[in-house]
Image 1 (cartoon, one colour):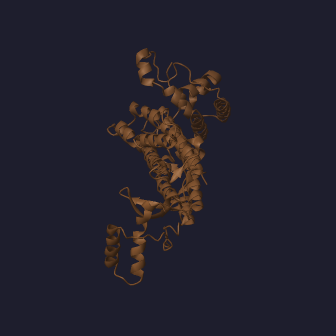
Image 2 (cartoon, one colour):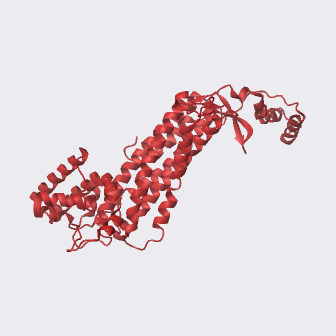
Image 3 (tube, helix red, strand yellow):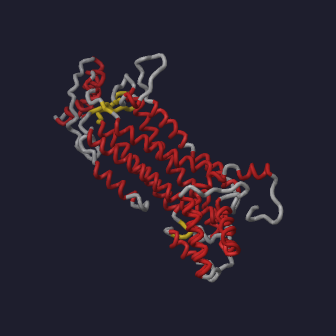
Length: 434
């Protein structure tokens, strides 16, 4: 029996196609559906659609369902469309007519929006915590290795001196920018759609400010049509944040794979974190970072997938929106797993502090020689040309020193605390992370 049933049921083949795996996905929404229902019935009692006794009975029953969810005893039964239907059916089965009153003034359209937004807020917090953990590890490694020089590259050619501290710190600060996008997604999600019903409000005198307070939302989606139009907007905002974070992790993973190559020899992993070859006994492959790179590259396709699903939908609710759960829910889990694994591996990554001593890195220091001559009064362009001619003639001799780097953000001044301050300011916009 469906909540909307009026004496007929859809064919089984239609049921299977339209519901798909939505029952399984909806299990992730169950606790939020109960939270939304608690707030809704408290509001219904205030406006006179429930008595105080009915509110008590319904609240106790919802508390019982919430406990079943936490114990893993809650299921969505075969033939029941979704979590919203299951909760209402349970209340009706256990309480009779009182259970039938819970749906006054709302639709499954605003129910699922509430559930998804509450879940989104928790998911964003979880992602933010994982981002902060990796950020902290990168900053720690940056400070540990700030005096270890490494080659910097442009166009994949040896360029200028860098340091492992500068490299680790670069990815830490890049995560700050990603966290800004995540915080923006949090703001998009942190709006209460409850009371928008099917998208056009209700003739009941609903107190939407009350449910906003009870559910802990920052503000309302005031316009009921705009509230329904937020379905898809919220998901796309989260997808943009995930894509940005994934881009950073994928790029870091590519660096590690490249730097582990014997031609670079800049970093290594413990043998227990590498894989071997079935034919080449010397191999220690960075499969961990290759899989990280691949999974994060897939996550960067997330915004495009959601955009194509939602780009030409007409006003109001459309069933296409159901499919977003199947796209976004696994992506959130995947993003958190990738962040956790990257953090684990970066903490154990070994750096080769002597790599820069190799003769192939002599030319890293041509700019230092030019700068030394300029400091002695020689015009820059003359010094540049003279050093260039020495390189061409094979007579250039490198002085392996990068002592002159003192400006903010350079090898000798990593600005670790300033970058940490930026991250803390961003994460304050996401409740419960700091």
